[in-house]
Image 1 (cartoon, rainbow, N blue to C red):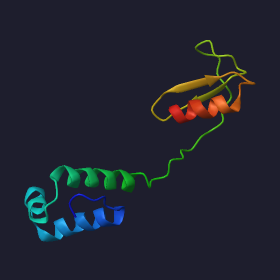
Image 2 (tube, rainbow, N blue to C red; image 1 turned 90 degrees about the vertical axis):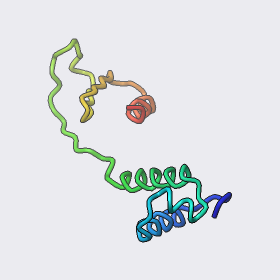
Image 3 (cartoon, rainbow, N blue to C red; image 1 turned 180 degrees about the horizontal axis):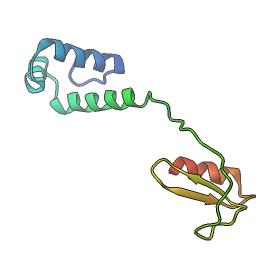
Image 4 (cartoon, rainbow, N blue to C red; image 1 turned 180 degrees about the vertical axis):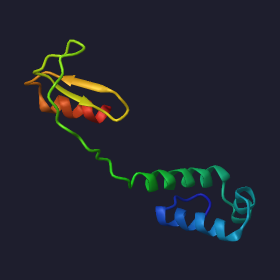
Length: 104
């Protein structure tokens, strides 16, 4: 399979085949004429895809705004699970809010 692009299915099959073989990554790649960097690339990509299947939504709660840190009570304040806070004034463009949410 050297020199051509693999599909996700082929890469998953390659990982499974290596695991069943009992060979080390280096030995498996040498036997199958696969560049070890290619093997590790696909292993990482498959892990990322597997981990991205977890829901991206987090629970939110709506609370009465607090008058702290100089934040106007008319502002919308978003607090991310990692502690980052985003305070947005009323009337701001929803497209801008969407962009800010996507960035953070």
